[in-house]
Image (cartoon, rainbow, N blue to C red; front, side, top):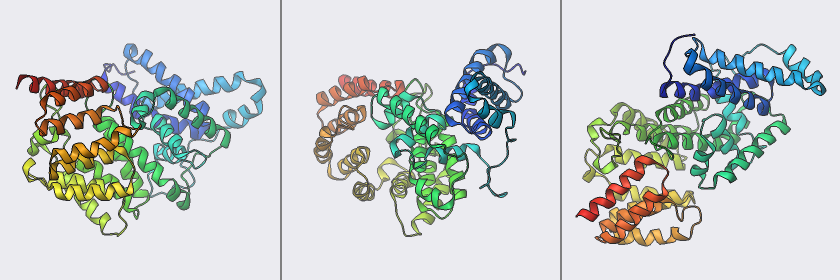
Length: 415
């Protein structure tokens, strides 16, 4: 074993390898439910052994070997399943590309696992939750935050999804062209949520989790290569690139959050912006416009403004008007209210926020309080703004965002 030091980089390595290992073990043993348990045990073994022994020269192979041994031992201990043991362990097929993968295609087990988790045997919310857990590596709490539901509810949803996969006998292979089209909306939603969690982590001390954002971009590129004619795939990739382009400017020397309006735009990644705009332009030219393309267009308007005051807010408001007609997502309504405030004044934005107070999906969410605080500050009502900044800080589970919100409140107290 290599004498590598243990630390954050190693933990990121485990997160990156987890779906690859899971895909390989599923391919060999054809059992999602048992394979995931075995891979989890292998990850625990790595956490216990690698800090003392060092990271193996081939960490992926080490994890696969440990997971396979755990699963083999489990099958051998179940005498009532001796026939299955013979078929699945003793005579296990060697790992080989799935039959649907052609030589010019990337045989990425992680991508196959994506489509497997997004099988129509599962409800869309369950498929998304399971994929975020198995492929994205998000914790149950992080997934619950993304869905705006309690952690216990999400844990039950993920458990039911795994049981459904086990009962249905879903094969580990890339779906047919027709199947891909049916599952694509769920796959894209999962990628979108993984990227969002990577770009702005909902829990903990880090504002950004770069490995998640980068993995979401990588997998979206894989989906685009597989389905090049779907405009929304290109739209989602464009949105990720146009958003990720601002990454270097989002934090200061002490990792403090820097809002969009205060960022040093010379730090933005112009190559990502150029690629994102090219992808978006090509997608819009195909005639079918979806919500990811519209969100990418909003990101493009922000990225094309060399200064904050150059931002074309009327165009952004028009784009959010279209998005509201396509989606009932409360976050879209929240961003629409911000755009309306920038165009028509803070009172208009505050008026629009009142409709969200009755929406159980976002009422009590820290982002609603944070936006309200910002608009109240714009309107000159500093006492109310301070109250809502503090309420938002108390509700968020992100330490960098909490610190930023408390700093905003303190700034107004001192002014």
